[in-house]
Every structure is written in C-alpha cells, then in structure tokens.
Image (cartoon, rainbow, N blue to C red):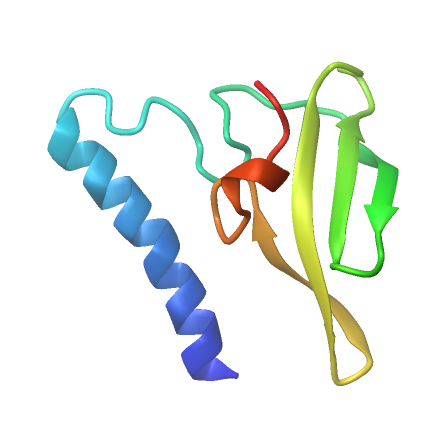
Length: 97
C-alpha cells in the first residue's frame, strides 16, 4: 500500500514539476486535483456514479456548473479516492472545462 500511495504522490509531484519547467513563474496555472484554478468552497455533492468502472462525478454545492470526476476503489472494506481531476483520470473521463 505504501508503494501505491507513493506512486500517486509522485504523479502529482511530476505534474507540478513539469508545469514549473514549462513556466517557472506560473507553473501549471491550475491545481491538478481540481483541474482548475478555482473550486467550490462549500464542498461537493454526488451528481452521478459509474459503479461498474469506479468513477463518480461530483458537483459544487455553491457552484453547480463545476463538476469533478473522481476515481474510487475499495480496499480493505474502505472506499478510497484513487484519482481526481488530472490525476489518474483518463482525458475522455474528465469533467469538461
């Protein structure tokens, strides 16, 4: 489990580092987890779920146009987030911006 967690952290760090290399001043110019610069401040509610493939789309409680796709999985009887925004979400599954 530790190696798996480290792999995910490395993906996040690699995205940030690649953005920094391309533009040292602005970096990615967005947060890779939210795939945006801004995000809803009052949390999210579930919009729909693809239980077969493990994708959940959430919508901002105070920003209904903002959607975010999460990848979830069950490990040891707990549901865990395995991807969000740009992290571990294929481009065709991501929320449209």
